[in-house]
Image (cartoon, rainbow, N blue to C red; front, side, top):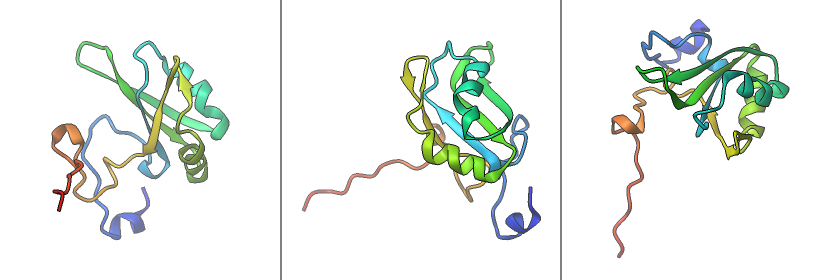
Length: 123
């Protein structure tokens, strides 16, 4: 992790399972439960050289439907972020985003009452 990025006021979550550089990590969601890390590797390796893939599992060992893909270069992450949204894995289109959990100041996952759509009242 670059010290200048931390000094710029960006905090990092203390997730014991989170490894690698968050500035080179892609978040992939809506992954079918039968999809393996090898399948994800094959789908996303043409965006750049992959360093590590971590598919998240629950306490029973079942896949949660999302994963983190760390690339060796930040530009590969940017390429995967720009072009990887909608890639099909296991017959379903996946959604990609940058890893916000360790980068976003005050960021909270939606399942923990994070950012939600607020509807404005009609005039």
